[in-house]
Length: 132
Image (cartoon, rainbow, N blue to C red; front, side, top):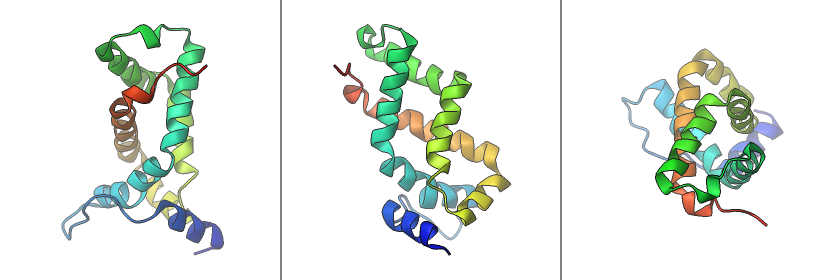
């Protein structure tokens, strides 16, 4: 393991969530890698989403909570460019070995990653306010 990989793991901290003997590869990757990265990168995800909202010229800040939730879902699921930017923010924090593991099943791991990110943004809806 090189210095970059050691530094990333030290920065992220330990796994989040239980890893049991019968846990599958995807669940282990999710709890050891994705969850700690999402936690570490949380502030940049919030800022990135606020930037997306401001560039979208929507009335996001005037929406009801339910409509804001739908907007978050649509932004991450349907805007390929935005979703790829978010994926890049996560993948940039992978070690080389984690990247290799990720490439073995990237489709399912991407779904897990984006769903967790959507839930993280929704859970912080109160932080998604206009920045002056």
